[in-house]
Amino acid sequence: MTLKLLIQIAITMLRARLRQTIVAAVGVTFGITMFVTLLSFMSGLNGMLDGLVGNRTPHIRLYNEIEPSKNQPINLSEAYKKDYNFINSIKSNNSRQEIYSANKIMQTLKEDNRVLGYSRKVASQVFFNDGAIDIAGFMNGIDVEAEMLLYSFRDYVTSGNPLDVKNRSNSIILGKPLAEKLMVSIGDIVQVATIQGERFQLKVVGYYQSGLADFDKTQSFASINTVQKILGKPSSHITDIQVKLKDMNLAPKTAKEYRQVFGVSAQDIQAANAQFETGTYIRNLISYAVGITLLIVAGFGIYNILNMMIYEKMDTIAILKATGFSGTDVKRIFMLISLSIGFFGCLLGLLLGNTLSRLISHIPFNSPAVPTIKTFPVDHNPVYYAIAIIFSLVTTYFAGWFPARKASKVDPVVIIRGK
Figure 1 (cartoon, helix red, strand yellow):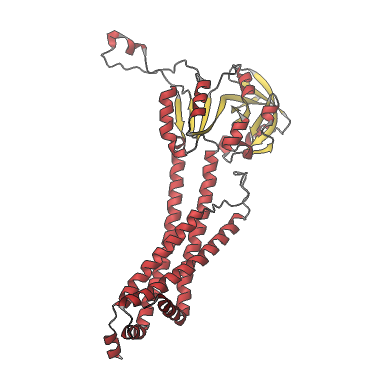
Figure 2 (spheres, one colour):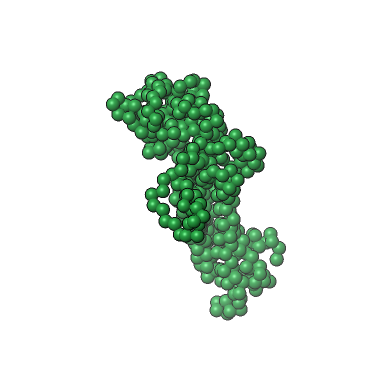
């Protein structure tokens, strides 16, 4: 039979069971709506949490690790070379914390196509004077423009202008909890002491708040030149090179390569945040599992409704087959019914899911732990909509295929004889 005629018959059957049709479509709509909304919200949340780590942790950190010397004098002696030597209380060697040949390393990074960018850093432990008490902290000498470009440094400076640490000499940005502990405001002078006992006065030009309270309680930021001057080091003194790759997944392999080529310690972001990566993976897995479960439940609803429709439409099926419709034609009719329910339920679900996601994205979200986020994070990724369309059609296809197969095998003679 022609496809047009089969479509007309399918529409007639749908209208005859309008209430059940609507219930089945609502099941698909609800499943798609929650699937899109859940994935968009959970992915947005994961993106926010990843940002807290990604904007604070470079993909690869190059530095010199302070560690005991592996080549002890006894192992170099010919007299004990073949013996097993046990040495206790080995002390660290006197190697410097600064990176050797930092300029050559940065030139190599600039020519590496895998590298999106890099930033220099001079890090040192310091003490902040609070009357008779010295509070332990950490001072980061940074290239402000590179930090803003690669790690969104500007977004985390909640008060003041981050460029002031570059443009104003002897200036500093304090972590907001640290500034509250020191009871200093923007424009005030804070006294900083190095571990060698040298003291310097720096002007506070801003507050930094990453959302990680323990981190912000100890951190401060100044220009590289300011920190080098405070430490009494030359302009070549660099303790860290922070590398950001175009593809973060290449970090472990690239870090291993840099460790061998440059002869420095190299830590990749996966190693530095292994537990966080696991948490992100599990949250994504749960989101997809719940969403797919909703669609499968909706598919069982369609299956049950079509099964009931077949039992109630046995007479109609028998008449169709008796008047020349083949089993394949009957099967196509019920497949058209199933796919129609899935298709229109899916369209409405996508519309409602998008609307609900956008409503969530406008709900205020004010947390002192995450000052850069003003509303609930939602990721409007088209991939989620594509997954929803494909999975809903596949689910409704199989939900309709089994009842349609049963309907195609109905013997019209048995049905009519029974009447």
